[in-house]
Structures are given as C-alpha cells and as structure tokens.
Image (cartoon, rainbow, N blue to C red; front, side, top):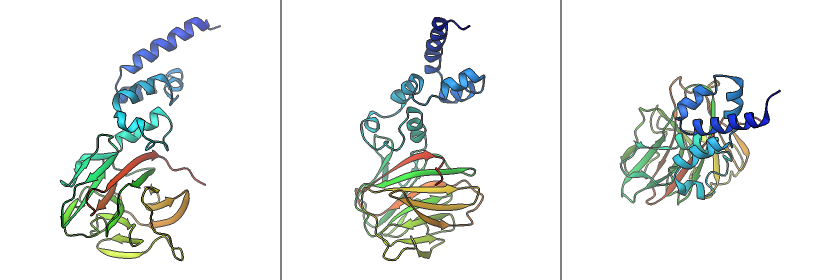
Length: 255
C-alpha cells in the first residue's frame, strides 16, 4: 500500500523539478514511465501553469484572445506556433502579446507574415482573427518558405505564386499561382467576413487539403492536391494599422 503522505511528497518534488526543466526536457520526461506521463498529461497542473506564466506575455494572458485554448499547456503550444517576428515583411511587427501582427501604414505595399512553425505531416488547425479594417485585399491561408512576404502595390500577395494558397476575405475568392480558383465558400450570397470573427483554418497534410470554418460551420474544402512540403500559416494585408491575430489549436475535432 502506498503511503498517501509519501505520494504527496513525491508529487510536490516532481512539480518543483519539472518547473525548472525546459519544454523539450518535459517531453522526454513524459516518456520515462507511466507515472510521469500521467503527471505531465494534466494540462492544467501547476507545472504547466508555472511555464505558462513565465513564458507567455502578460498581455496575452489578460485578454480573451486565448479563450479557444483553455488549458495552460495548450496556451503554451499556441504561443510557440504564433506569428514569427523573423519571418514577416519589414512593414509588419508582432505586438507585445506575441499573437497579433500590426501592419504599419506604408503606402503602395502589400505585406505578409508566416507562423513560426510549418507542417508537413498530420492534421492541424488554427484560428485567424482580423482585428482591423480589411482594406481592398485581405488574404488568409498557407505558404512555403519560398513565398514572398512583401511586394509593391495593393495586391493579393498570398496566392500570387505557386508557393502560396489563400482565401481573399474581401471578394470571397480562392487564389493560387496568380489565378482566381473560384468563389468560396460555395454558397448562394455567401456573407462577407466581419471584422473580429474567428476563422478556423484546417490543414490536412495526410489528404493534402486546406479547408476553412467560420462560426463553427465547416465551409468545405478550399484547396486539394497540396504539395509534400512544409506549409506555414500565412496572411497578407494592405490596410495601414490593421491587425491580425493567430492562435494555434492543435488537431482539429471531427464532427
């Protein structure tokens, strides 16, 4: 029989030790034994709370931006998948909350940003929230590392080459390789995007498809036949001072 006092002491000791480890080390620790796996599988434990409070910007924890990722562990994961400050147009910067990009008011320029982590395997979903005016062109989707992140003029940069795929929220058009691939979603009088709505982007690297969901309604497959390359969450914008947030959610829920 296990002494409950000893078990509690063991729990508290593990909690302290794991709080000092890096996230990669915690992943390795979860594979040591069943006890450690179950300990670290509690996504709201004090271990994940400690890492969350010490790594995430306070601005993001105080807002409702992360309401779709309720546990401390999923908030951490979302942060490490957020926009990359090192992979965006020079006219874009990432705000202190770590999840929101801001496009500076630069005339005759279209500017884009990619997420920190790309995907080549598995199924992934993330939310995009456009928190400022769309302007004449506002595109969300995916791209490879080869896709351009800035160009002259006000154009649909995302989807302008064979390395990017996008949905223009202003015109409800799909874009790839510089061509309009059709209207989307395939609904009669499909409503236009309203600023502040959360759109879920669903990338299936097993079926090589990209889909979207809005207000918990699946809008259908937008692109098929995606290449076997690492693909990154991406947006492109033209409106000065507009802001776009992205929150990685993990594996999409079916049904």
